[in-house]
Length: 116
Length: 118
Image (cartoon, rainbow over all chains, first blue to last red; front, side, top):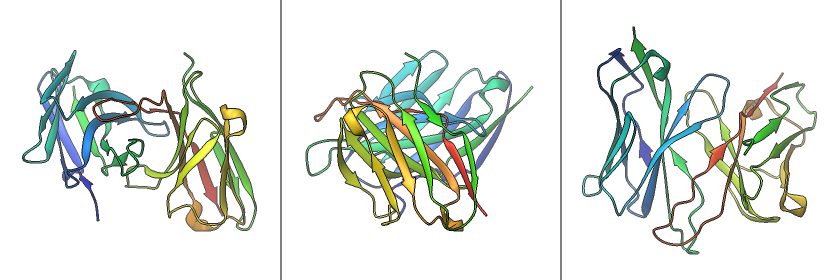
């Protein structure tokens, strides 16, 4: 079963507008969430993260919101730029039974296209 | 901080051959991870090391796969008797190794090795 879900395979927005990428999770043990950006033929690049003790984290044009009761997080990019066009992955991890968090569980990704 | 590096970037091999990939983590990072990504999917966890100790292996890692991290520095991932289903992007990541509830331990990825098995 897929524990991290990104239900929108693709999203297209105009340059300068807001991009909102969504992610849902099912495992209540997850307590740390990350967004990665990936260009073709490259590895994922870390963008921004949020711990479950917060509901918002902001870094420049990127803001991540976490709604624990709904098991939902979103990434807002504003203003969107053509260089933001890439696949965005939501990932999560949590403390395992051994008391250590290490394994990331990824969604399938959302392809964002920002049109000039 | 030169980032995580992986070699080779691309590998084409024939079914049944053995292949070995190398990963050099960010220096002073204690943890090293291997993931595999196939088309249309997110990366899937394969295994991870805390220093030189391999602490977990996913069920995705069959007996044909072996990973090592001698001296807790670089790591190698070997696939024996490759099959066409092994074709994928193999990603390595490293992190500082912060542990405990409420701590964050961001994983940084390398560029990956694209394996094609003919």
